[in-house]
Length: 86
Image (spheres, rainbow, N blue to C red):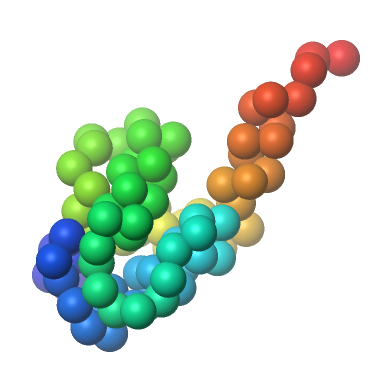
């Protein structure tokens, strides 16, 4: 897989966008790797402690696949983080 980055277009981008939506990111699945998709990738990389470049290379692709498989969701993660300790 080639690195998918801002400005990329096509079916690979659409697939990444669909998976990012499954993870709870509010982006369009339009096949255009624009600013919103870039921001979603940066957020995902930040949350999981990855090198932050906003690109979807092999490591970030694997992260996306794993988190979809685990059922991870951005909104649930934010809610858990903001929940007061009991």
